[in-house]
Amino acid sequence: MAALTRPTEATYAIHENVTVDTTDYEDHTFCGVMFPIEAQSILPVDHIVLESVSIRGALGKLTVWVTKPGANISVDPDNWIQVYEAEHDPSWRRFVELKLDSKIKVRPGENRGVYVHSKLQGDEAIVYDNQKADYTHQDNFLTIYPGLAHVCNKPFGRTTMWGYGNAWRERREFVGKLNYGAVYKLWNPENCTAFGDKFQGMTRTLFMCQRRWESPMSRLPDECIFYILNLCRWDWANDEGQFVMSTASNSELHQQETNSDEEEDNDVGDEDSSDNNNAPSFWRHRGHNWARARHYPTRVLYDSRRIAHASVYSHHHHAGVFNGVEDDDDSSYEEA
Picture: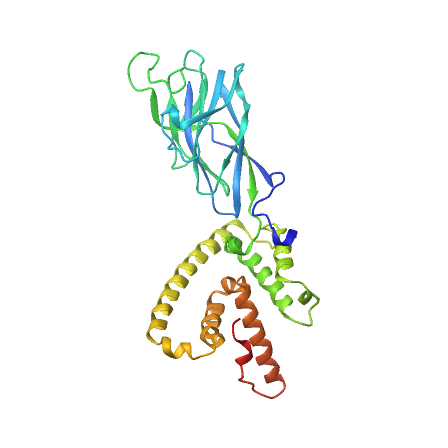
């Protein structure tokens, strides 16, 4: 039963915990800083979980906010939810960790805003920097972008301590640490292209062993192979992050080309449908499937019906060759 109900994401603890430590030039201090984060899609990550934010400065009564899922990152308080509130003593040299009340889940390609604010009077509450580059930090899981500084001691306030001017300062960078965890995707046929070349090669090898009658693995049904692969982590085949990203991009391109080819095949099929209707169904699909198998082996591999037809035909055909007899009778392999 477990082999038929494979999970798509890990249901247990986080696979990896990462602490992001940004550069620190101590350019400015004031009441708050707002910045976007984006989860990367380089690795087969299902989501990352933001657990805490660490900052330094005079601190005071601090609050942390994040944007609601799907909301725009703006200075509109209706787009934000508060996830932390507590008062802290000053800490000028050592970062103070603010553990969020609720962990924030961010999917690959998703953007969420983070806003750290202090109600302390004056201009020394939170340390931040001027923007130095297009992004503050980037790794295989997360990108932190420059954002805004806030010079009002009221959350989302619009007035400055001087009584005039804009309360938000552009081109500012977060200074501190983000602690987050990464939860990887679990292998399933529909997301196989999110895994690296070596992992996909391992997958093909397992299925080729299963298709050989003399192999002990031939006794296992497809579902058992699927379940075994579902329990394997993405890097157990020694794939590396940049190669996984390249593989995923190429697979998307191949899928687009495949869809285009199928549309052309449908157009051609309409023109000579009378001939095709008189042919056995296996012959109508065999050439098409083998062409796909040559150029897009991964795609065909996970289509169990196509695998079955191709493997039966290949075994029958090669058995005839090995016996010195060419057997062209494929009528017994018609598609059910």
